[in-house]
Image 1 (cartoon, rainbow, N blue to C red):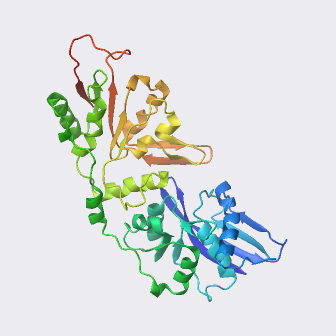
Image 2: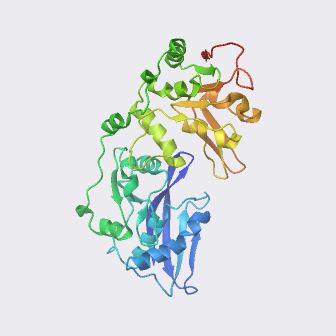
Length: 372
């Protein structure tokens, strides 16, 4: 018997729909094959699904074989978000949904061995992709519900376990979709833990910061250790203009894909401040990997990228920042794919006057110079 469910996969920061086709039929006893260019995390879902079905009181179709196809089959699938739709496909083949089709609902979630549903990356991108494809509903882990509910035009349901997902399919009228006022959530999230008013003195440096922020200029701090360079840099986002809703959604998508989004917040409401260590690699700064992930320049999108101890960064690391600084995005090319991540940020850097950290004067001073 064949049963189909829908899921979503992230490509860069965009999502596309994946059709999960599950066939239960004759074959070698106990076979469970996953095809469609799955990565290791997807292949390992077989053991998670078997244990989750058993521990939730459902039957695995022994002695029949199970074949799962993730279409389109020419794009590599990665991540654990296919666990839930694959498990539902197996249950659908056994008639658990009374003949109901799942052609307008997208499912996303990682299964624990006890059947609970764990959060996944890219829920906001999946919600945007589902809306673009005309889907009516999106079912995600409860921890991802607020994030996905930011998108209007698609009903978002947050679930805690596999049995709850089955009940949602069989009796959707007993569940209420998650509603979130995006603008109210943005206002609630736009709270900084620091403020420029905390800094006493340094009037000239504060004035330089105001000029740099007003004109979207980059800035470099020059001064001895302890003069307050890092303290001032951390407060730059607090005097930048408040984030618009579009900026917040775009920033949230990047942090969701990278896995740096806090579960309790539906939106990133404050401008990002990223401060990578000077030992960072060029791939860590601009992004990379077999399936490229956003780097620090993309995580700082719509915010501030701070490079402390600027002379300590490797030359090749600084050179790769040329494209994002000039064009506002970074393109990562591989043999089989090419991805573009947004990277519009304000660059702030700090350094000592000389390698020993001292200055040739009696009193420590700090200067800040805006740079175009």
